[in-house]
Image 1 (cartoon, rainbow, N blue to C red):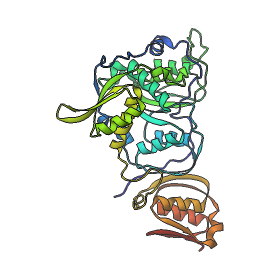
Image 2: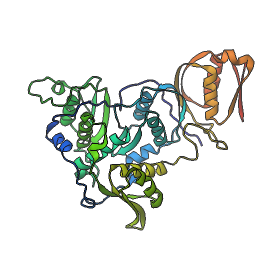
Image 3: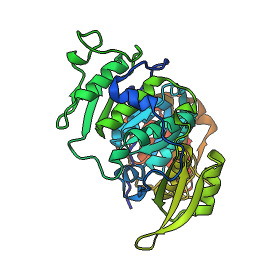
Image 4: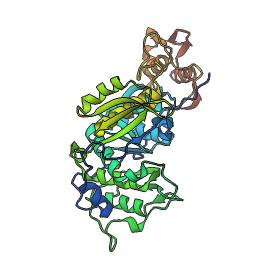
Length: 406
């Protein structure tokens, strides 16, 4: 069966990566003052119990999409930005992550979820979906955002946001948090809003109380206004620990076939006070009920989504012994700049589940630097293109790729 695999490797910056201010905001408007000042009650069981069906959510379907991505010589941040743009994901990330590190040769997949997790781990972070946004950051930062969203957006949890509530916004490089917040506050719900004169700090009669930091370009598509404003406020606060989520406790039910015992063990490591139990929902639907802080819900969401996405038996970043490689009919869009031909062919062979033998007389030519931009080519076709440009001959498969001189 032919699988359309997408590889996007050109360096694009900004989309989906949001910076944040280092000092605590003095004021952020009435809504943001309330958000940062109040904390949810630590009393368990006082909030209505929410049922969160992750399998039914649009974001889960996007994250579970199959994909194969071969990355070579790109930064973590640029690959995440490319992946977010290609898959129509809203990504909101912590600023102080090492997302500038180069990825040598990495195979991502077999799903969008697995790929984002691998990239986040490379930056010392984790991912968790929050509605229509994928959060990427360290656990403490994620928990602060989850707690703030739980408090500020509680009135919207029972039903999807309507067209009257969602906004789409975009802004260029070097804008301040205040400018982004004003843009989101005035954005309409029909057309995407972009930065305008009325959003710029220093305009007359403009309240500019957020710290003066400069954020990179970003784009957010169809997300509830209250969610965007909340994320901006938390991001601008610049706190580096979990104080923002202290005392935040709630109960939620997650329909799943995941073992409640296994989930309780995982959750207990992050939140020893959390309670996890298996229950049956109407229609005899199995579920897990969790009462705990944001860390417990973060761990549970990750475990359930990992199960929903399904790893397909292929280890992320490699081809385990005895496992087949990429479907030979899978096609790729690929852009690589000035990479050794032999290394590129070895990468393609590894992703096809085959060894690569570069003969001694071909080793010098295999060091030839090759640039490649191709669309809709199989791994074999990519290998032959690279070999031709480097003046090499190639014999492809079925179990080994042999590289020699013509």
